[in-house]
Image 1 (tube, rainbow, N blue to C red):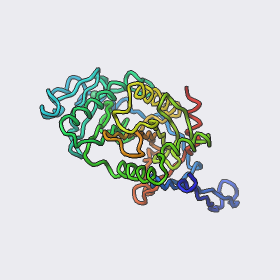
Image 2: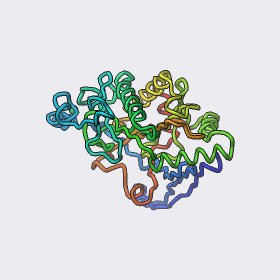
Image 3: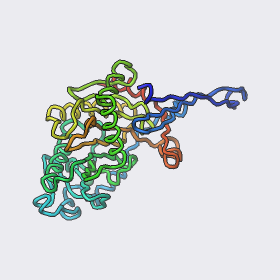
Image 4: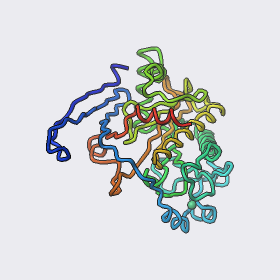
Amino acid sequence: MKDIFITQRSETRIRDFNDGFNEKTVPIEVRTDRFTGRVSRILPFRLKVPEPSHPLDLIAEAKKSCPFCPERIETRTPMFPDEIIAGGRLRHGKSVVIPNAFPYCSFCGVAIFAPDHYIPMDRLTTDVLADPLEASLKWFDALYAYDPAITDYSINWNYMPTAGGSLFHPHFQVVAYPEPTTFQQHLISESAAFQKRNHTSFWASLLDFEKKAKERYMFSEGKVEFLASFSPGGIFGEVLVLFRELKSIDDVENSAWASFLKGLVRTLSCFHRLNLDNLNMTLLLSRTGEPGMWVQARIMPRVIIPPWGTSDVNYFEKGHDEKVVVFPPEHLAMEIRATR
Ligand SMILES: [Zn+2]
């Protein structure tokens, strides 16, 4: 990995008003992951511990007009054409998959977890998460039966408005496409190129490296591995979930999905303990199983920075495509390892 994970360390000097304007040096660390293309600046001195941020009064107010609540779902949400989903909405357990009313691609759905309008992070159990996960997988199966050209998928999650969610009512955003998104395609192409060059999967090499290094590796559940990304996509780091040797959605057996949910809940439990009550998740799936590519997910806490409600995304990410990270990946790995 030494040609792929690049760390550049430098420092800057300032005269500190807290210390009689004496000079001090501040370390700067820039990490480049040449595989994913991600660049992040690890700046732990900028850390401000977030406060719990779910606005219970707004959540209660929003319930009065929430389209995902059971009293409105039949009349205020769209339906799929019958030839895609007979009856218009896919129901599984407590979960319902409906079309996204504001789609951004041809097959864009929403998997509503349950009738519950609000589910706090510490009540997101494997049971609660299993229904929308299984419903999403059933929706992908239905789409594939409708059109076998639709072979790439993702299950995405903006948990709470701080993470970009437009409704409090918990839901996954499920997306299927003939052509994957730019980042998903980048990973697919790079994985294939690495496999061709090295006759092994990049993800196997990464896992091997991280397990030996014991810095960012977290734990495994069955065939599912949890580790921190070297150059993460979020300010509090990123949990990278690798489905070991599983390339296609059809390779993932029920036991691996159960392992994923168990590890996800352990991750959420850690986030909750650290007041990281909002997150983005992206789970990448393919029907065909591309060479060298494994099923994988990324989970990133999202925060509002105290005391002024500052966004955790600033000009660095918007204008320079680099991430500011205040919680080093190694710390995140240590915290999640310590969570049971
Ligand atoms: Zn609701």
